[in-house]
Length: 469
Ligand code: GDP
Image 1 (cartoon, rainbow, N blue to C red):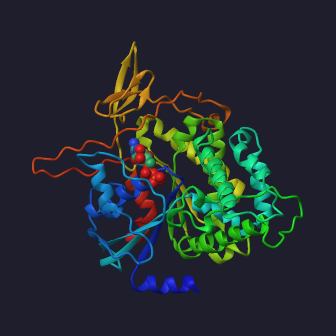
Image 2: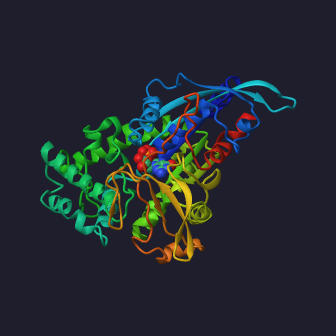
Image 3: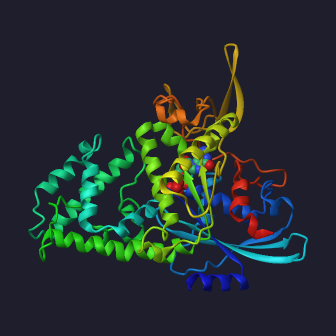
């Protein structure tokens, strides 16, 4: 019924809801800012056909459709990127929305003439998608799985303080708010350490514990798994019953509304993936990234697998997985980066048996912070990139001050993408410093050129090109 309503509304005033997601620091804020900048600036985008054919007459920011969702602070982010700050904007920690209203000319044909499309961009943390798994779990089985994973190799050490606190509390006895808060805090410390540790990405739900949005501190976000014996029943007022109630509140008041009100309303989706940082961090990080991709793909298939999630069946028909920050590599390595992402997504598609939508992969840079150069080393000429590393970045024993440009040889990705799983990239072999956003020089009339990018136009063509013909 909902989809029928959406279909009817769409026939009257055409719109497309585009989801932008990815795990923390994958590049969502930068992507959304760049996308809106190019759309409303009607900048030349050769692979985005409506733009290349000169059919976009005007694109403006318009009132967003959902009054209860925070607006994406586009203007603020764009200003941060420019002088005098030239800094990257603050990252996404919650859902935000923005509407771009496009007036365009239809392609010549039986439907030619002026037309209108509203593009609603919804930017949300990928960690929230991982919570879908909780909808089909009860507190006892979630506790069991989470504790078993926390005892695995490499994790037990960082989980030790939380495990010790759990051992001090009997789940059958009541606990004070202070005790519950402490257990929950230590569980969060463990989740944070997982993300900052060798695994780099966070695939352990609850996703909101690390990306709380507006709900930080509420009981629905203050709980922890418990070490329960098999078949344990919660006695009234016991710690077990208290934690279970909060876990259920989290599912009812946090997870379900997100999938029902936001996720299931999306038409198109881009998933940003920081493949380079996973490659740089080693095999554990890569394995976690694969796990995260599985979970994201499962969310796209929701509805076909379980009864509960069928209530939130997404209507997404196109998903783009994009390896971000491709400007950290020389052009000669872009195809290899793309091949690695393709392989990761293909493996994931096989495991999760499809995404229920058309899937495409590409490597892009939403904002290109570097340019290419060739550096002579002895008799060899090496492809390098040139940019301004941020203050405090280090390569070898060189410490950068944030003002000086440097030519960097980022290292080579293997030709065979399978090799990344067998340790082809030694830890520390790649050099991916954080670069400052690009310096843009005004032209004679004082106008700034558009933000440079790599393949953002190709991404746009895939995501909304077919809605502008
Ligand atoms: P979010 O947490 O997914 O919203 O991630 P952000 O969009 O805030 O990006 C995190 C960081 O990645 C930024 O602060 C930049 O340092 C870097 N970054 C993101 N996109 C690009 C890009 O296109 N090029 C470069 N060089 N760095 C990027």
